[in-house]
Image 1 (spheres, helix red, strand yellow):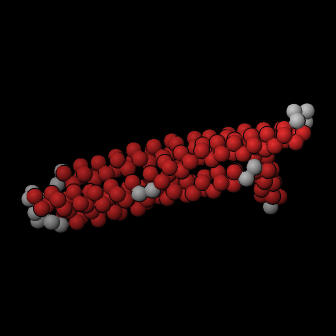
Image 2 (spheres, rainbow, N blue to C red):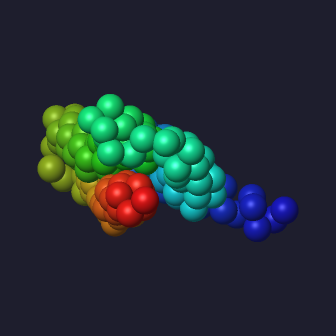
Image 3 (cartoon, rainbow, N blue to C red):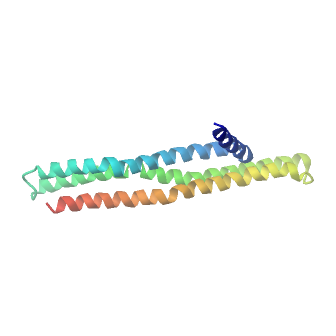
Amino acid sequence: MVALYNILEAIRGFIDLGGNVLWAIMAVLLVMWTLIIERYWFIYRVLPGQRRVVIDEWQSRDDHRSWHAHRIKEELISQTRQQLHRNVRTIQTLVAICPLLGLLGTVTGMVAVFDVMAFFGTGNARAMAAGVSKATVPTMAGMVAALSGVYFASHLDRKADIESQKLEDMLQHD
């Protein structure tokens, strides 16, 4: 319990150091990672069962060679492809939003520095330091948040393409 309290205090101190923009970065990061975990759950837990259903549906058909049969096969593959790519673009968008939120934190931090300079002049370095930390910490947090999702977003996009191609190949060889 004490360890959890210490972690929450460290997070609160970090947010105090970087300003309110860090709350937005944290919210975007939470949504992004929820979607990433959901996509991996779908690919490794749900997709195998759906793939079997699609293959069984295709194999249960008597006609595999007509124009109509090819359109049905394309529809089955397309539906699976859409399910595989669901939320991948959203994840990529959230990855792109993180550095922009960091930039917003930079701007708000610099405004705080300029406010201190307007009030105290350049002689109060301690007062300016708080604004500088509010300018640099969100930038770092936004970049780290984006970097944490870049690999997984591109991996999920590639994996969705590969899995839909596998299904197409499985249906071709019947």
